[in-house]
Image (cartoon, rainbow, N blue to C red; front, top):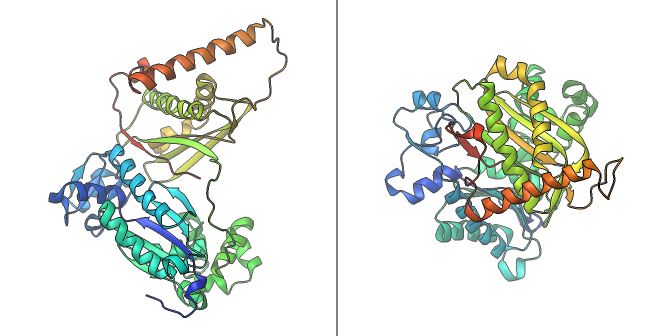
Length: 410
């Protein structure tokens, strides 16, 4: 653990639950503790650290995971249990500080600046936070403490599992520069390959490059972004009460080949789910985003911006189906293993501009829109009262439901 007399300046915590889904399963079933656990079937949604020791990785194929770790216990996901655990952990976060920025179901940034007199130093607060999550929720959590959000997140990643890592302001570069470039936000497989092909393996090697040379290697925006991070420059502050920028859901399909009809049925189910949430929040969207992952673990996205903001199911579904047609060569050639739908460019309901021409009295287009809205409202009402499966599309009957995965917020 790093220590410094200047610890008061490092007031941002990044708290990240360890192997979240698998940890919940081990908490709720004592027979799983200390054993390799895999959550999911065709796709690994989470793996305990005992399973990770054998090379099992999240988002990998289930069959490959069992070949790596044949003694693993495979359990089906229990999304309601994970949601309840997340809610309990975030209550601990908010009891610690009012400045909490959730970034996914199992991690958040906390700003503890100004709490020294009532709660102690940031390091003492982080220590107490970890203890309270363990005692109140029964889960392990790793906390990184640093001056910036970026460094706090890197610290928590380095400190895993079940650890606490503090980066004092006067030793930031000493901590950061020896790390591999993959620790930086924005360095995925493609960028990593470009950097390593250029002879850059550590953050320190990247930092000594002139910014324009790094831009030439990885591109303009990415180069400037990575150069700033390599020198620990990150001006972002913890934000609370941010307006949500997207609503989405995704569905893991597993490794089995899926027909186009099956993929269409999955897309319909995803659209039904996200537009229902959109309407429940009294929101409309302008952009529809299709997210795909393939058998070789590559990813692709397709998007379409609508001419008019909407919360209508059929309008969104038509856009998704058009994107699926556009992506069909990829799907057929590479094998689809995960499909996601996200709605972005959100606005409050009623903010959309009326399409022209329109007849507010008795126009056919206006009547059709009213009928579509009435149908959506009726379906939402039935599902709210009797459950989400009370009404389903005929195309979804008798099909493999796969595994639904919460999509990460922006």
